Amino acid sequence: MTAIMNWLAEFIDKLQFVFLKEDRYQQMIRGFFNTLEITAGALGVGIVIGILVAAIRSSYDKNRESLKLRGGFGYHLLKFLNMICRLYLTVIRGTPVVVQLMIAYFLIFVSSKNGVPVAIFAFGINSGAYVAEIFRGGIMSIDGGQFEAGRSLGFNYLQTMWHIIIPQMFKAVLPTLCNEFIALLKETSVAGYVGVVDLTKAGNIIAGRTYDYFIPLLTVAAVYLILVVILSWLVGCLERRLRRSER
Image (cartoon, rainbow, N blue to C red; front, side):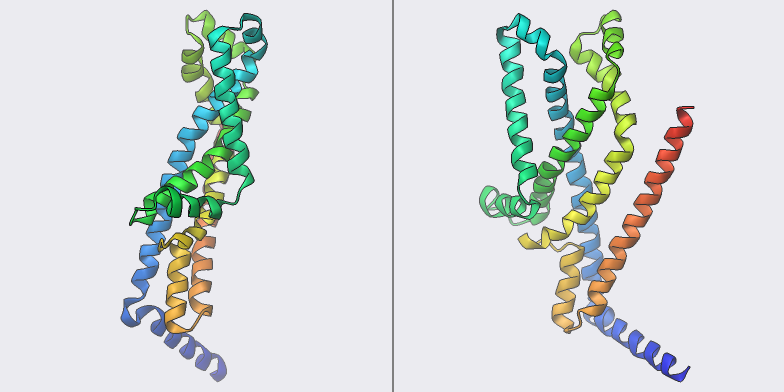
């Protein structure tokens, strides 16, 4: 019992030294909020890109045969946009996110002094490629009769997509989209490569100053774990609610 009490006292002393001395805990708080800001911003960028890319690719796939019969400007424009989207998906999904982040910071936004917006841009571009495929799968799963119903109401193709197809698609892919949010949260841990003080970078800075890597990195891992557990629980609640609404 005495040994346990002594170990606890030593552990508390280490915690105080690591986090309280020189107010080093503020680094962790700053890194925590930077991580949330990058994750939320990148998800927003990814959703916008995902909707555009998924709409172009699914429109081309669904109308390819009829467009070939008609030919003309509309077919060639949609075919060109589809090729651009496929190239984007191939490049982004085929290269590591940390390389994309470094290209964005050191080559594209070389004059930027704030790495957070650059990280949001880089992670958003990366997330958009995966979100686009999630959305495309959701759009392609919608019954073709929904498109006919939109046409019967007097909607053109874009209006049918916006008012009928995309709302149904969001409901179908929302749990998968939330899981992408969880994956994105963990991917942002490499933002420190471009000098962004995110949660992981903050833990590394504290470890370098105190020469104690165990407590800071264990704390970082615990914070990520708690966030993922909370988000996973929320996703589970959302899935159960969606299942009940379908009955």
